[in-house]
Amino acid sequence: VQLQASGGGLVQAGGSLSLSCAASGRTLNAYTVGWFRQATGKEREFIGRVGWNSGVTYYSASMEGRSTLSRDKARNTVYLHINDLKPEDTAVYYCACMLGLSGKWESWGQGTLVTVSS
Image (cartoon, rainbow, N blue to C red):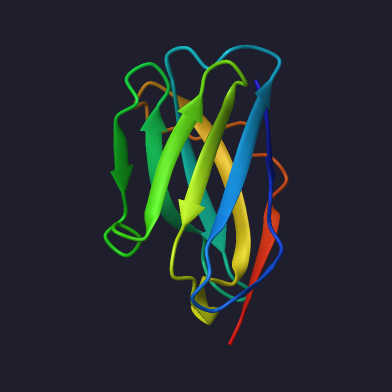
């Protein structure tokens, strides 16, 4: 499966943004899709994940409450919506998938840059 993140751009602080992660090559049945981000000079950070079949979501403590994951099975796409954006949310956002909850993330797509201005 190949994943492609999109939807990044320049946003003002306090605004919101929705990012898309489109899958191709196969369906995401039995997969879990996760979102990550990496700011310049920092390590990659886990944001959250959603089970494709179950729809069950899990968020990192730092992003819970401001982030919402959803999926559109017809479009084979997972969405990440972030509210109340802050300048420290500026990063390249990536999606990846793993089979079930194997812990092995794969199919990292090209990220999408989100820049939050103050």
